[in-house]
Image 1 (spheres, helix red, strand yellow):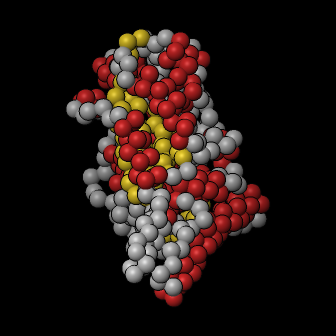
Image 2 (image 1 turned 120 degrees about the vertical axis):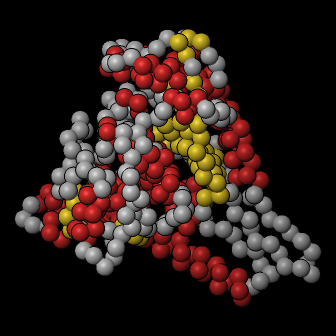
Length: 390
């Protein structure tokens, strides 16, 4: 099941938008009071109650182990930031002493840093990642880059037994985009894909008022900026040599929308219980070494955690882009009815068998789509490592 059918994860079912602006975190107040203020606004009414992690450490071995896992993962994420900062500091010192010498950029590109950051995030299991994500979302909603230490004491039930359903299309996109966004962009980025902040499900009128975006054009631009910036500008010996120009990393949040599903679900009562949408949310990261796709499969399918664990977040060579785009454009550009070629292209793009998924609740035979892309340009290493995990 795709995102229009997905269950609510943080008050999405009400479709209401907070009337007051997000409360800024008050460091002078205890953690529990800050979290209660957020609950008062109805923001975290579904996620459950939060308490200071120190109060959670008792004789319960399971709780103690969970806190230990979170501590170890947080420490590893902080170490990645520290190692990178130390490397850049050493390079800056050398550049001051040797202004004529062109020093190389960090050994890992920003795209690879994102890949490794997400792998560490999920490295100690889905339940641990769920706790980390809820802490992260609290910080972003409060427009803070310091991620406080606490644990969710009660969480809503879901089929996976997790506090965060990692098969959610929107949630998978939110995590990757929030990590890649600058501190100034992170709240608005989260807001775009969180229904309790954005005002509810996608409105058909709002979608129809927008022009469909070409993924091929967006990827071509991203590839050109990533590969074209990787060079040395060598000038005459009488002038200072330019440093190795860093590649420009672009992150694309792609929303592939099933227009007919939206139209019918808005006008026919009970339509969502009888049909499946083929809509998709996924993220593409573009760098000089290639591109990465991050995605989840939706309800009843794989989660972002599984996608990463099996290595599907690999860096794909740019030579693979034409085939990927041909499959996607067969879905996003052509109109008409589903056929064998489109089902196969859908499976190759999203690793979901739409015919199998739609056995009980079929997709509509009529075919109309629109593509929306949220773009984060010139993503920096500092954006990835903006968070300080306590």
